[in-house]
Length: 359
Image 1 (cartoon, rainbow, N blue to C red):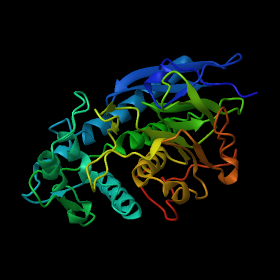
Image 2: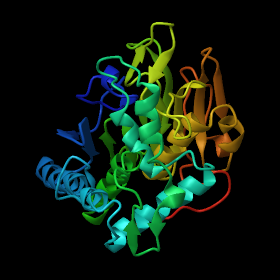
Image 3: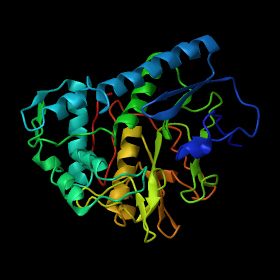
Image 4: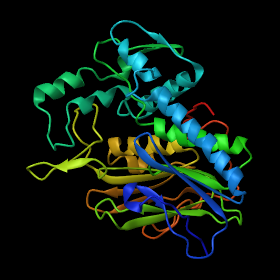
């Protein structure tokens, strides 16, 4: 029988969250903290409490390092330095940032331009807290600042050609942090547990008895209900949806925070997309791209090594089941092969190529 993971995070707070156990659990250490504007948790099993506590502290420090380095809200971050030079020249970046920019460039290419690091400026036009749509002029002003194809990036230095342009690692930063936190835990000799950053999950390894951790996928329309369960002994899970930040317009349209960079308008085809992949940065990128691509995502995501659950605007489920990753979507399980190994560099196919980020 599969036993479910425990967590101190409420299941309604994140798209995916561990479930309480249905039987006795091994000794587990749970470390909760807030970073990247999210409630987060690291769960470790099978090690003494003092060792687990020390390991969690190192993993949290790595998450906070990435937040400091790439947060657009910090004046001293790499992202702020790049954005501050928009229209005025380039910025030379370090190897870690270069790898992430290369990864983002590949995402842009494979999504036909829909995954675009420069589209974050659209948040200036939309007010989701007030539930207010932008005026045509306000939207046009921001759309004119979007376009990764215009960015001057040579693998070492980056220049944004127009004042007011900006880049934002919001689509990959938290997921990358989850992968890096697991890398730190592995370096410390830990083998059992997972990292949950606001619902973006990377599994360190199965429970000490070999059983997977079981995670719940929140129903996109019924906040306190679960629409699927996914069991992971390795790999990662990320979910993107139209229910995290949204408002209902006067004419009944749902306006969510995932915006098409071509039009500046909210996506509408999928209610939610959950992706299982070897690395969290890959799962998160694929989930976001699927939301942006719309209907064709059901075909384009169907690739070996990636499992998914898509829920369309009518509430119908669409799944992909390579190598027995997925079973029934409602109450079912997604279980990677027990011999699946994590590559040194994150890789994912969409539909058939390799993306690389620093390990």
